[in-house]
Figure 1: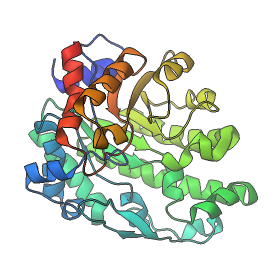
Figure 2 (figure 1 turned 180 degrees about the vertical axis):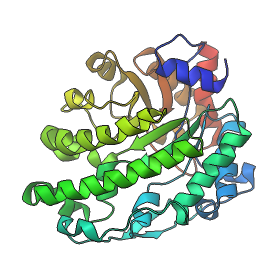
Figure 3 (figure 1 turned 120 degrees about the vertical axis):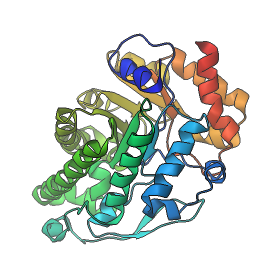
Length: 337
């Protein structure tokens, strides 16, 4: 069973030889200094060069770390394309937004549409094309920053959250615009060759928004995005950060093929609350960076035995995470098979 068959069968609820071990990219960045050394490629240069981006993404597979490849390696591509200022980081610090575009949700119509023919969005599409052409039996994962997280990268987040209540209509207008841009970018990634689209929306967590706004903003706009991506033929993973206890009901309304959670979510609890969903997670990135292989294998076996169908890091990898710890996840799954 090759990597693509294994992942797709698991997503479709069919029997597999073992759980897949993946790291999508985007917020769930898989690139470490060790992988950069193996690939002879560095960040931040690879954020803006399709050949280097594809080479780094491929190294996460060829080194035996993960059963997939994915791009990009950050959450700033969409916001930058809509006018935000971004600092590109270093080989140990990921890119981050350094300047917002608008001061209030009322100014949503001043935002730029994403132009996929230029800038880093174009780089991502070209990298996906390269990966698709070079790895026939390996799932290629494209990535989107979720609607709430993208919107709150265009405007100061505390203002954005306040205006959900104070300027509700304008905030929905902003969300509609942002979601339209994400739909276009996601469809372009599928056209370029992405088999799966992973959407990470850490700013749209129930811990921040509470159940009411989580449903009104996170669930609503994720589902609008998901529907068109699935119609185009891609499978969809959605990652939500934070504790889920108060929003399991709303999370089950998210129409993705897979739900992914971070390490604060207990495997048994998630499986009990979401018995019919394909779940992905949730190996502590702290353990991956600062633990040892024995700890990582223990966490991996526990996650696989107690609720998670697909094993992945709980968030983006720390850049200094040792390769032996990352490889230990897949090793534990193969030993268990």
